[in-house]
Length: 177
Image (tube, rainbow, N blue to C red; front, side):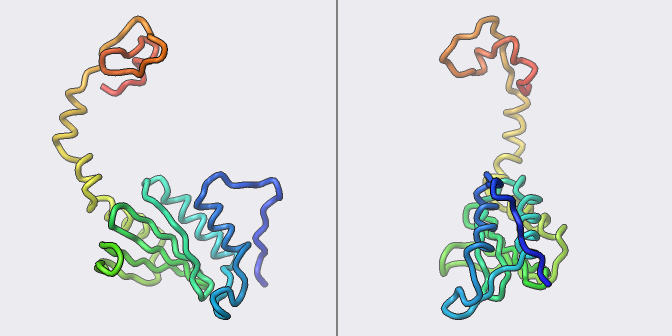
């Protein structure tokens, strides 16, 4: 017998992705896809929320899509790199990564019945491939950070943003040098 997914009435998640995952449980019904399709079980919902919470720190965009078999797909993406993390009704996990948008894409990785630690490896690999991360990890950027020097100001002018020229004395301990 399936355990019901229960949240107190007063519980309203602030995270948009978690709201969407929970809404799939509440809005989908058996036959939701033109007479076919099953609603995701509470176990699938809980697993999706757990995976999302474990991976959201990576900073990728995330979307959620139901599967007609009662599973869910978490879609992590940045630029034109996508990772579909598929939570199947039997709680196994599949992963598929793609590069490209629309009909112009290539499948990069397709693995079935993976362990949860593999999800993190796949998502980090996507981040490494994107020019955004490559730029931030380059030696040139490192040298810019290393060479950055903040100066200390004894006065704080209200209404102005801090710059490398005007860092108030009481905030110096928070400035990376």
